[in-house]
View 1 (cartoon, rainbow, N blue to C red):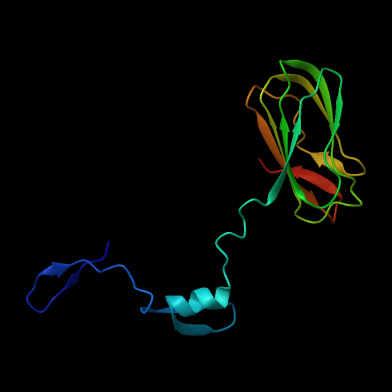
View 2 (cartoon, rainbow, N blue to C red):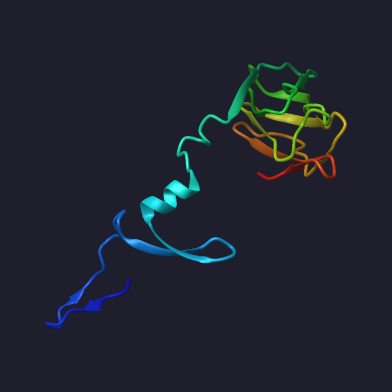
Length: 153
């Protein structure tokens, strides 16, 4: 933390900036001087923009089932809630023709899935999960250029 000396020689700690404090920022082509309030207004930030961006899909599969993820361009959180451990399960992703760049699918399982098969539905799957522990999860993001679902978590 930076300390500043006052004329009397007493060291002080800078206070937190106020909305009226001025800041310099670079937008990629030029430097600007603005208040925090002006910067936030320019950014047009909505603090709730990323809340609830996933549509939850609940499934209670049995061994050998094929669970299709809701087709379309929405981000989906697939919540697998089987009654007990599952020996084998197939999960089919949304059709690649309906998926959009950056679309995400999160899969969670409340129980063990010993053998998990992921079907790309027209897309390849990079880093495909092959099983779940109880409480396990995987997160995928769609890459439109290469028509693939890439594991990102």
